[in-house]
Length: 357
Ligand SMILES: O=C(O)C(=O)C[C@@H](O)[C@H](O)[C@H](O)COP(=O)(O)O
Image: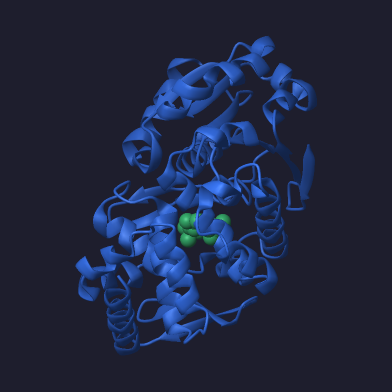
């Protein structure tokens, strides 16, 4: 079992390893025993598969479970209100502890609920996906608005992150692709040697039992170092958004949940590499093609339909499009670009993709 400490305003530990969920009843016994209620906000699909293991770990605390729709659908204003209704109906109070059980979507939702219920109650992230190595760390919470992804949310650090690698065994193929996109993103913004290792995988499922946990730890280390430097996203934290300006626009344009977050981010990273005129683009596209990322989706999405979402991106200002680009691997920077340049790069990327498919 490995532990990584995240030194934010409220520091906490990320526990990672097989069987980590068992630590809840040990390391966090005092927190859970002091709570008047322990409420698990669970992705309904994850609950079907893994709730017994969580219940075993929480046996002494009689948890109540509120199931929310699987995946990105959970990040709606309706589900957010449903969570609050559940907490109020169950007579929860400021002494209630909330656990997020599932992937990035349920973590973002449950974190937002925890940060707003009676102005804030403690919560623990219990992530079950590869993607959540990113989203569960750093205290970003969110729900979506039809006009933009993650537009409503807070910064609110968890009390702990308990990341049990056993849960990853049941991930479907598109979730493996989704999660590995964020791992690759961490490599792009930090370390070329690590990127080389990752781009060598032509079949991501081969990572299971062969280094996956090590890559997740590296990703968490990159993320926590950035969050520690810039908890509230005044500067370098924006680099974590590499590939997300277009990625988020695609998710909002298609409708949340139609494509996984990470698959959309892979399209966004290809676009950011094109804008950066990066020599990494061809091998990144080859890697994405080998691993069946849906590159051809870009051919069906006109630039004009994505532009309004990109303009609403949180990094953008009223009139400007701001992107995270790469000087080189490990050297991200922010750049304001014109619509004309954005459109030309989009056209060029689509041409390259058309020729390679
Ligand atoms: O935690 C952050 O900060 C991130 O930017 C993490 C991202 O990788 C994450 O995938 C998220 O979608 C970004 O959302 P944003 O709303 O912070 O742009």
